[in-house]
Image (cartoon, rainbow over all chains, first blue to last red; front, side, top):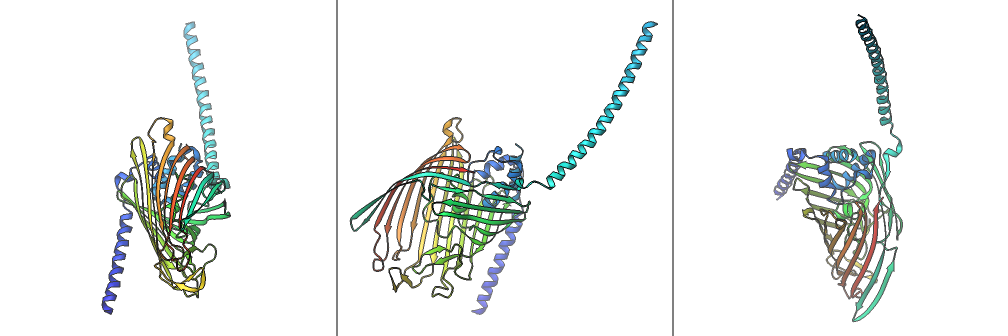
Length: 92
Length: 406
């Protein structure tokens, strides 16, 4: 019984580590289609997930950097998405 | 001969003039270049020492409005009606400026005080550290990662309806703690994680849970987290799963080992069905607390027990003719259903359903006027040997609300 428990725990640990490893490796992979997306496209797709798409005139370029960081913590944007959206909104 | 001399003279003059101009032009270019270098150096110097206002900004929101309507409570066939008409209701007034301080590309501080009908409070005050791509660490007082509503949809300038769905105050929306989060690509898909450790809630003697606020009631910590998956490359659909677990009893009390386990499933999608933009959000919460001998709130000498299991759910759909080339595109209609079931045979058991519908007019992308109608029907399921039944309560309210992002 004790062996079974140990095996179960070991099995769960190995499974957990395998899942984490898979997620970590696959998390670094971006398809060509996604990588080629422009800031304007990402702005339209991601901002509207929660609210209306913001006007580039709403904030200055420096403020957009701050807003970009804030929104990344809210919507869990990827870093590439945040950078492209901020660049698009800043170069109005 | 004379004309030849004239031509030679003109040509010589032209060459002289060209050389003079050319020399002057070269001198001007050199001066310009030096000047441009100097300007460039100054620009870099300014960029390196940006003034504070570039890093500090104020956003947040203001909501004002009116709620009017009536509530009818029926116990044993006898009905009592109470009427409300007020500007200062929880759903109709809030002034919450949010201070954002970008210390560098690595650190962001957020602080949002809020004034509403409960007085002055703080919505969040935290520091985020952008450690590496896909990893943000945050500490302080923050919205806990559980479901999507409290963290993403609750703001008045985002929500299409004037009220929040019932049943989302458990677990508490904000707490002190530490979290790690990030969004990562996954081929054509995308996934996100948000996990944290917090002070956790407090179990009251009658079995209810409440946010501990400033005082932590035990040395145990509560773990909460959400994993989200966006299966389509256009991010039009997100599904999420949240879990929370932690001991909630007071330190040293008979409830010291009582544990709360909660789960949530959420869905969010935005679709273009021309000429409409269709927005659907939904969340289902399951809240379980260990079965204990709770104290009768009406007679502290008596104990009683029940299955401390609650659920809450909401689903909202909104339609906006965003793709019309007419003023109609500024209107949005929304419909929401919500349900909240607290433990039967407890002193606070009830089954409550809520139906909300509304019309919003978007003055700008972050400024909205809403007209909302909400009915709620609550049926008491209390243990009548412990507490008197609260009967059936029906409410019927109208809201007019203006909300703007600062």
